[in-house]
Amino acid sequence: MILLVRGDREYLRAPGEELQTDLGVLTVPEDVEPGQRLETHLGEEFVVREPRGPDLFEHFERTGAPMMPRDIGLVVGFTGAAAGDRVLDAGTGTGVLAAYLGRIDAEVVTYEQDSAFAEVARENMHLAEVEDTVDVRTGDVRDELDELASEAFDLLTLDTEDAPEVVRHAPDLLVSGGFAVVYSPFVEGSRAAAEAAREAGLTDVTTHETIQREMQFDERGSRPDTRGVGHTGFLTVARWE
Image (cartoon, rainbow, N blue to C red; front, side, top):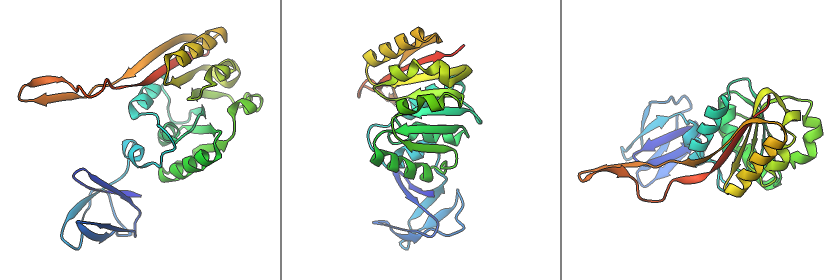
């Protein structure tokens, strides 16, 4: 898949597919390359771009509110997630986190209880070209903990209401030095996850509110954007000994 970009317009297409807009019609060449400029039959130009993580975030089919790229960046930054890591994820949803981790060549097993959501996530993994590294499973991860305990994961990521219950099993799931990360939209969930992590013997337990504000620059001066506060949620991070 490639992106056809013109200004603030972006269209996702496969080689050989057709684009029809008010700017005209064009057929994507089978041998299309990033950086090419393609013209519609009306002479309007589009630039070809290879989709990257932020682009996929915009074009994934959504089944709810996905984790934001900035939050995913914090997950990677706090844990050092890298190629070759084995990740156990629960609460797949749209699959944005799983796709990002798959694109850095981590091996991801992710659980989604809703079968329809899981099917959408599989389609998104195909779009992100990570279906070989991300295994989307339908079911409740809590039902599989005994079996998963024999697999040894480098990273445990949870975006579920029952995250504290799963965190209590982190010592059985993680390799020495592995991390558990819980994303929660509410601080109560983060507190419960932090308490569960400490009770389970995990160390370096911290919780962070994720806030990002875009800057505005104009003739009057510079200041943070006043539209919203940029809050998305809370990340609780802990580490097994």
